[in-house]
Length: 173
Image (cartoon, rainbow, N blue to C red; front, side, top):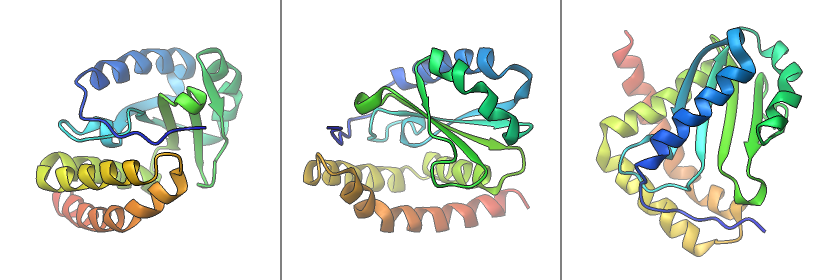
């Protein structure tokens, strides 16, 4: 059974991300346009589940399925769209999850949503601390119930996302 665990920020998360980027470049090659570190491990000082979230941006999402076997060879399990249309999702580590890879095609609005959320929390550490503390409390309350953990943070995620998108939109005008 997978345990929900939130830990203090770990400086090593940056180098773990960079190591994985090199592996993903070897797998996807010229299909890649960019690769972003997203999620709580990408926000300096924030408490997080120690899972590295990676967002590769690709030229053509329809070509990504042909890389499933190569991803398996570097330890990933393919989950297809996994409930989000026009995304390809991979997990590494099984119940001891270490990485999530969320692949989107250039121009998909989900890319900006993820980057806005990340960048907003980087620029607003008080919101990052509040969010991290709520996640830590929920992980203690629901250590073996990921669904309740996710449901418990839903309200603050929506609040931060709303503020982040407005903030991000004002930066890109």
